[in-house]
Structures are given as C-alpha cells and as structure tokens.
Length: 299
Image (cartoon, rainbow, N blue to C red; front, side, top):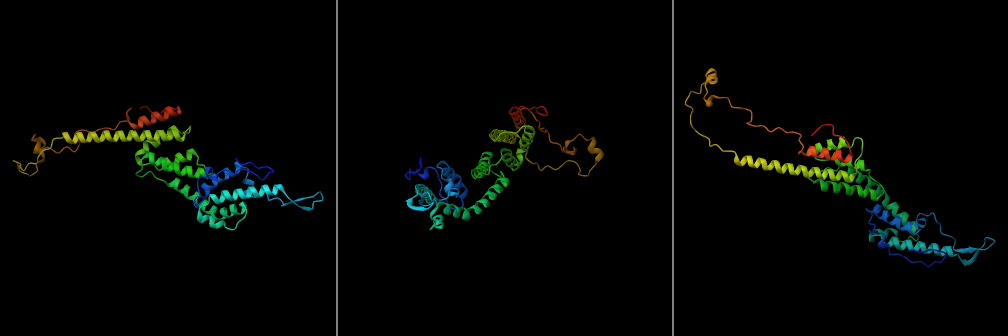
C-alpha cells in the first residue's frame, strides 16, 4: 500500500495487479474503468484531475516572503506526480506512449489521453447499444444467444452504462426465433404485474428450448416409424374392363370401387391439443409458479 504523509518516502505498489489491460486506444473506457479506482484507493485522483494543485517549491516566512527552504509538501506532491506518471506509462501500449512524450505532469498525460480517445469511446458506447438492440438469435442456440447478449450488456456496464434487466430481457425476447412465440406469450402474461429477474428468465428460456428439442425428436421418431410400416403398392398397368365414357348415374349406383370418387380427406388427422405434456403448458405452469399468479386458462 502507498503511504503518503509529510515525508516524501512511500511504497509504490505494482500497477499490473490493479490494472490488467494496456491502453491501445479502442479500449480507453475499459482502461479508465480499472485505472480510476486504483487512483482513488491511493488518494491520487486529485493529482490527476487537477483539483490538488502543485504547491510552491519554497517555503515562505512570517512576512510571506519566499525563502530558500524547500517546501516538504512540494516534494510529496512531486513524488505523487512521478508515481502516477510511472503507473500511466506502464499501462500504455507502445504506440499510445508516443502520444505523451514530453509531458511532465500526470494531469497533462491524463488530459491528452482523454482528448485523443474519449470521443472514440462515445462512439463505442453507441456501437455497443446498437449491437445490443439489433442482435438476433438466428441460428444460435439459446445458450449462445444469451451469452452474446449478456457480453454486450457487461461491456456497457463496465463503462458505467448499466443496462436495466427489463430492457435486456426485452431486447432478447424481441429477437427470438418464431418457434418461441408461445414462450413469449406466456412470459408476457406472467410478468405483466410482476417483473422477472434475468437469472430466472435465463433458466425458463433454456428449459423451454429443451422442451422444444425433446418434442421435435419425438415427432421425428413418429414420422420415421409411420414411413417404415406404411405398405407400398406397386402400380398396375391393367386396363379398365369398362368404357371410359363418364356415366354419372351409373357411377353413383355402381359399387365397383373403380368408379368411386377418390376420398380427398386423409384417413386420419392428428388434432393439436394444449395438454399437460406440451411445452406450452409446462412453460406457463413454470412461469405462474415462479411468480405466484394464476393462469388465464386450464391446461
């Protein structure tokens, strides 16, 4: 720990244990996010921001005249200044270091870096927000989609631009694939009076994805079995024994299946029902149990 007093002697901690990144320009916000707490924890921010001005080099006597005696506070301030300069230089990339050649105070270096890279950082914030608001699930799994979205949110949070949980959930839900429509509907109902935490939202979304995958595998298996056991009829080239001229009256009374109108309806139809084993029912039950609300219909 650094110890500053009227004595100019103090211990310099290793900056690499406090600031893990080197400033390359594009990462200015991440760099300052780590550097500023390091300055505050050692009472050095006032030197950098200029609020603690450099004292006079020499002491004054009782008549306010300068003497030849060195001012101890001046020595301490200079030690602090050089200490911060060493920190700054140690965390700058070689290309960035060339920008601050010739600058003698930490305030000058700090302001020069802000002038050069802060405008780019504002553009970076706008870029991250746009990415977060327009990101789509596409062919990503829910796990990958959530990871990418949360990573963008964390980058904004790291530069003091926190993203509200409800807004983050809204961004994610708005770009889910169409097969999550039922999930979105259930979520909208379940959270209309009480918000859901982001952690709980992640769990419910991943659970619903697993239900969809299990349902798709089950349906695929049923289709395969039906295709395997359906008898295949060989086409015949036999000519009909009767004339091909149409006779509507005879066709209606003749029981011969050759003249029977083909049945346009399938032999069997499978009605989709909202039953207890469906993903929709499971998801709605999960949301209502989580938030302690009642479903608007029975499953």
